[in-house]
Length: 146
Image 1 (cartoon, rainbow, N blue to C red):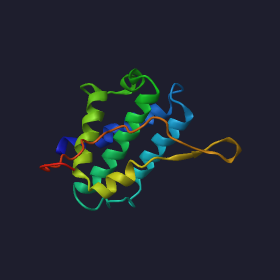
Image 2: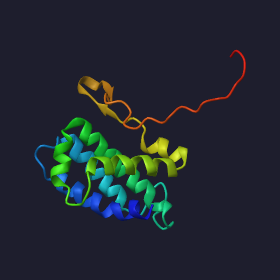
Image 3: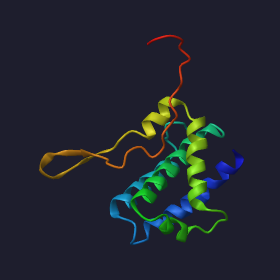
Image 4: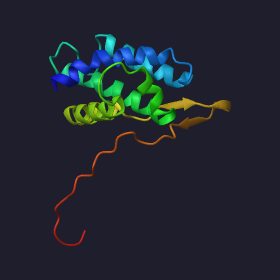
């Protein structure tokens, strides 16, 4: 977990580089910028003053934003801006999974809720990418017919 928290500054540098890349769509740049602002401002769903858990929601939101970006563009766009060791795509995926398991379900639900975008002629369309992270369904150990 210590490594997860030390990974946040590297993720922010990666986000800054991605926002300057013309291959990243404008909508995705705005989402990445929003995630960076969320990390920087002191008013979060979980205050940053709380040691450890205060930074987990930051790591989770940035990782989800980058996973979304990689689903819209090529993962090599993200890899090209990574200056650290290891495969950044795997690191981001692992960060999202670990941080998601540590967050309370209510906060995780708020951070992963669908964003509605106003379309032309007053219509509203939802995100068509589907869920980025899928939790395993809880298995009930019920005996007999349902």
